[in-house]
Structures are given as structure tokens and as C-alpha cells.
Image (tube, rainbow, N blue to C red; front, side, top):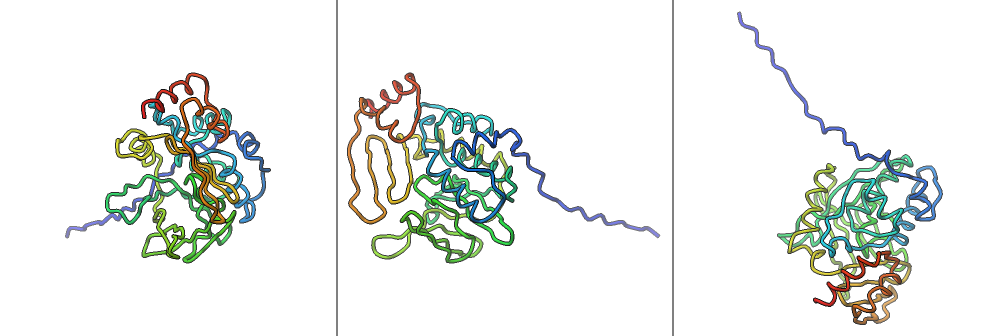
Length: 284
């Protein structure tokens, strides 16, 4: 008689090393002006808002022909020590590392900006953060997005700082929405809860920083969200949007004015970088 033994194998996701031990947590907290505090919904909201209001959203490196490094020590050197900004991958990886060092449970995910468009790729990093029995959407790298986290519940809303957002669940997806002028809602991005690996962000980062269809390779983008206003530099156009419905202020920025405008947006570049950015502006 022949005996057949059946072996059942299970596949588990590999443990991921996000190198959070390389982060100088004290330096990061000094940068955003926050104390180290035990995990709580209130502390998470304070950290999120302080990060968004302190560290600029910008794509200067991409405009200069550089692909931003996603290695945590490089991100911290740039956003914390050199007082620069970055885009979603840099912001999100830095914030997630700080949260984990503070004791939060964090899952790094990916979203599609322009979710309802069939050709929209997965190119945005966000995090799902657990605090006790509650979970939150933390999204510090969405430019003119959330000031504070949203509870990960269908229909959750916030108007913090005067900026309304809604989170809606549709099947396995979560949709972050903003109001439209006709009292409707527009999908800013959509995501599911699939955990991502570091290499997933490396691939998306390469697309964002180099592909001709990427919005970040076409023009300089700087955004600063605050209570009641959002300041933006989009190519040659500088504008201030107001949460209370006041008309948007707009003006055109010349190459000679670029340095002053960047400084007003808390972007620190050296003289060589500024000269190269002015050359890009002159060629537009």
C-alpha cells in the first residue's frame, strides 16, 4: 500500500524593514515643533497638522532633473535637516517612520489620483494608522489635501482649517472627496487597504520623477496648506486660494522674482539650484 502525504504550504508577506531606526526622531519633532507623546487620536492629529503646515510640498528636485531618493536617511536629510520639502513619497515615508517610532501601528498604502480615470496609475502614498480600536487615514503628502487625519469610516468628514473633505467607501475602495461648486463631491483619490512594499514606491517614484506624462516633470509645483488659505506655485503662476470662498488671488512670477517667491513658501535652495530653476522658467 502506498501512502501519500499532502503538505499544505502557507505564504505570508515578508517582514518589511523600513529602516525607521535611522530616523533622528528628536530632530524631526523639532522640525515640526511637536513633543514626543504617547499614541492617541489627539496626538496623531497634532503631528499630522504640524507636519503639513511646516514641511512644504514641492518637486524642485524633479524640475532640476533629479529623481528624489526614497531612502529614509536621504529623505530626513532633505526635509528635516536641510529644511526642504518634497512630494508624497518623501512626506509619507518620513511621517510613517516617525509614527512607528512613537508607537503607532502603520500600514503604508497606495492611491490613484484621478481615481475615476481609466489610465490613472497608482502614484500616491498614504498611511492607515491604528490608535486602539480606531483607524485613520493619514495623508500628509497630498499637496493641498488633509490638514488632519480622517477616521477610516464610511462618510467621515472634516472641515479642519476651513477645508471640507469626505471619505466614502465603495466596495473595497475608499474615496477621498472634496466638494464641488454645484454642491456635489469630486474624488481626489481612491485607494484600498493593500499594504505596499518599499519597491512599490521606488517604481512609482521613478514614473512620477521621469515620465513625460507625469505632472511633476512638466513644471514647478509648490503647495502650502494652512488654516483658511492654500498658497500654490504652479509653473509661472502663483495663487492664493481661500477656504471662505473669497476670490483666488493670482499673479505671474518672473525668473527674477522666483527666489523671493520660493523663500516666501519656505523653500530653501542654494544659488546654483536657483540659477538652474530660473533657466527653466526662462525657457517656459
